[in-house]
Amino acid sequence: MSSKAVIEIQKSFETEKLEWKFIPELSPWFGGTYERLVGLTKKHIKLVTGKKYLDIESMQTLIAQVKSIINSRPLTYVCSDMESLNPLCPIDFMQPNRNKNEFLRLIPENENDFEFKEKEKAHEKLVNIWGTLQIRVEKFW
Image (cartoon, rainbow, N blue to C red; front, side, top):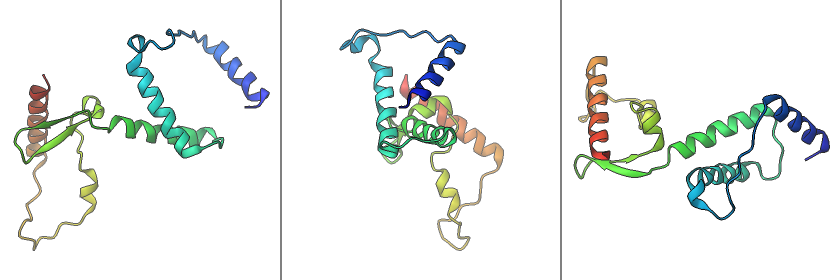
């Protein structure tokens, strides 16, 4: 990193009045959880960038994508029966009503297909999503 970049970073830290708080080395019980997340984030960023420097817009886009990857990783599984095994991810706590199969909406539906089902009305869909969330919360606790 160039000295100009270091000076700019130092100035921005001074104006933001950032205070560093360090944990003791080799002490995972002091911050192991978030240290692991920081490590995962760094790993994904390094895999993409290598030794290249990115402009601010590219870096923000990359961080948003890495955040999405990390928050979509499975923590455990939730199931109401053996046929519906769903992964529970960190994003489920932040966005409990999100559709995990959003990409399936891009596939055109064939009305002549014997498995074709009419689209649910908005009310029914919301009630079903809410019911699924309630079941997940009960299973988790």
